Length: 90
Image (cartoon, rainbow, N blue to C red; front, side):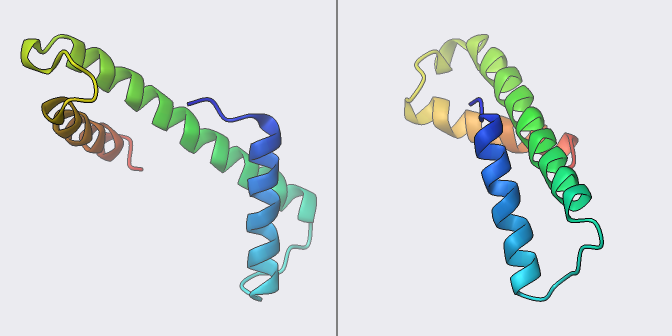
């Protein structure tokens, strides 16, 4: 799933606002903090997309799990996806 730059920006602003309002951190340079949060969100979705793509290719090679959405496909997808995300430390 692709996420737009506007959505990433919106999420980053919400995170920064929540952290500041809950008095969890003060930001001496708010624009730098915002950029770091945006980079983190972008990195997560990039890793998530790569893992999803790899798992879908892997499942395509399984004869018994050819039907996306079937119970077996979903079980294998979740298993392989969790493994891929664990490899990437997410």
